[in-house]
Length: 278
Image (cartoon, rainbow, N blue to C red):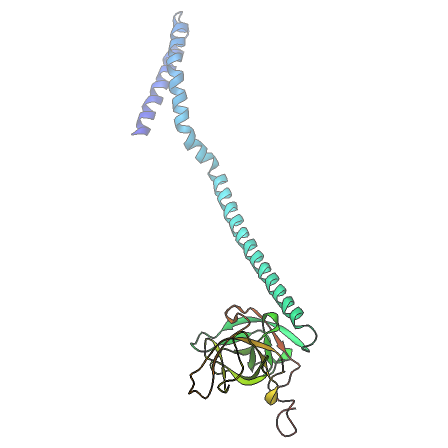
């Protein structure tokens, strides 16, 4: 409907122009032309304004397509840059954590390598980590694994060329020989799947909340003196033969991202001849 009206107006304007052209030799034509011009000019301006958006779209359609393509490419480049920045930030965090582990370990613990945690076993009661170091980097089954503050978090349970599984102390199959630092009471630190407890502690042993638990050299399976936990609760009934003792890990096992493996320790090497590996 709008197009039909515009066509009618345009036809009228053409007809008026032809009439003015035919009358131009006559004396009154100047006044008639001026009057008609005053009438036609606003109409022509309105028509130009009405068709200008369509004209602009037609003239600039190619440019708009190019601009849209450039914007899409810029968005893709921005996403790539953000991904690269995130990766660099993660590398920086991993490097800082590894450096902190190395500094905490110092020279007293011997030779070690740092490793990144790749995955965690989701099975209930299982606390196993997959790390990115293996046989080619010097890892062997039984070697101690440390977390923040050079605290013991587990041992190497399985290895291949460039990957290893770590059994955390809280795993339900974990049990290591320990000493309670203050009283020198020997015990077994076992995992429950979610927490730690001391087993084989006689009733009445001088152990209290806050006591530090250290790894023991008993059996030659771990180096002595590694920080393993802190006693949080001691509870038993008078008729019990053994104490019930809860222990808190000294590292947040749920947030381990970088760990340190003592690769120059050989489990069982300190046993007497014929008693173990050398």
